[in-house]
Amino acid sequence: MQGFGRRVISCIGSGFRRVAIRCRGGSRRAALIAMALTAGLAFAQSPLVFTDPVGDAGVRRTDLGADGPIDPNAHRLPDLVEIRLGPWTVTDPQTDLFDGTWTAAPADFVRIDLVFDGLVNPPGTLGCCGDSFDPFRYGPHPVFGYLEIDLDADVNTGGELDWPQLMYTGNIARWGGMPTEPRFAGRVAQSLADFDNDTTTPPLVELSGTDFTVELLGWNITSVDPSIAGDGDLVFEEGETWVLDGWFFPRAHGYEHFSFACCSGLEGQYIADVTMQFRHDPATARTTVSVVYPLTNAGSAAMRGEQVEGDDGDASNQNSIEEALDDLIFSATNAPTQWQQDADFVIIEPWESKVASDYLDPTQWRVAAAFACSYSEPAGPDVVLAWTDMYGNVTPGDYDGDGTVGAADLAAFDAYLVASDGVTGIDADGLVNGAVHLPNFGPNFSLFDRNYDGVVDAADRPLPTGDLDGDGDVDLADLAVLLASYDACAGEGAYTPAADLDDSGCVDLADLALLLANYGMGT
Image (cartoon, rainbow, N blue to C red; front, side, top):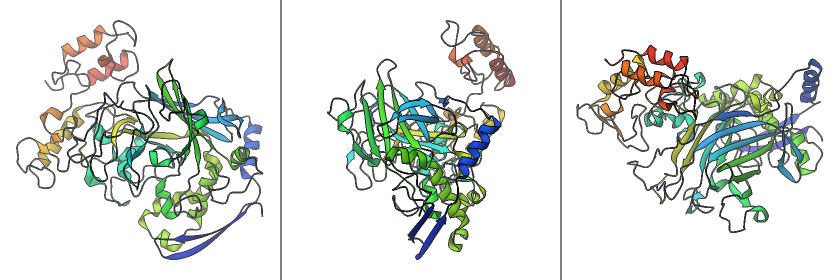
């Protein structure tokens, strides 16, 4: 019957069976679209674009000792430069999802582009989860990692309960600073000790707000289309365009514990077989990794050449963002008592009062990203990735997330060093000597280890914003450096990147204000 779905699902964790029956009436989405058009609402017809600096990739190893084999000369470090996402109109959904145009919401598809500097290859397997260690299967420069997408702008819904160590909030502190976005306040792991698998204790690393992820992992690839895989040698090379199929766009795994979704993967998992395109442009020397996915079941039906099905929480037939969100709402509303009494139920509970169609405009979504390279050789049990680039970025030494390094940040560093030096379990050498040696460095880390060498000491004490000559204070010499570049922008001869304190591309009054705010600090 159209609009009805019946699913019998086993709950492994609680040892009972449950039957869920759904009833769907008319299309609320169609009514909302009609209202929007009647009201004359205008939507942007270009994608949402996030930019990341070129050349900021650097290795953050996670193996014990943080000294595993990585050769950046032989294997390029993935360097993200741009994220694009927006509503997408497909010319012929049954033929080529990537042939189309950016459009306005509402739409039936979303397109997501990840742009990397240089040539990067599809990821091979990493020697875990039953697969062989073969990261360079498709070329010497594989890219791994995650784009995390928050659809409802609610940090209290979504995230990763089992492996937050693989997410943005679990790794960004390895770069020595805190994000400036308020949504991440109180949710970033500052060391290994913060991964306590407890959603009731801060920091709430597990509750990142992530609703969907684009996953670049070799074990997610189910097939590579040989008819359009370059020259057929299964090595992705300059100028080539590949199309791959796989499990690249799952709903956030944290939801699996409390979802009635079935039939497409593990219990509670909503994940469909998705098409991904790798395209290298020799003219720009960049690689674009793209996913096009249905926002609605109407889009999925168009891809499959079928009549539109009602929402049934089953990603193995017609599937879409709207259906996945509808399942969250249904699951939160009809949750059994065992779920509701679980502390982790907070990850889905707010969906009970939401409407799926409210979150189908990709230009309103929020993102974070964590990308990585592979070790050249296996680096130990459970070690699979070495992080290279994150979005959003942090300012090293900015411990309060205000975007600058000031007196509060220097005080926070000094307080950490005094409180941790020689403390058992925190300082591996046990000596009060002005240095905190991080135990189990690699898996463990510290927000205050600014140079990421496993020791927090005087070398990590941050330089205040405006210290352009690196002598530890902000004085007339630094002001002279900024004024010499004043009114210059990137690409101009007088432009000094270090003087562009807010990374705006120009040295202007905003930069002067940042320097003057710290003038005299350190003297």
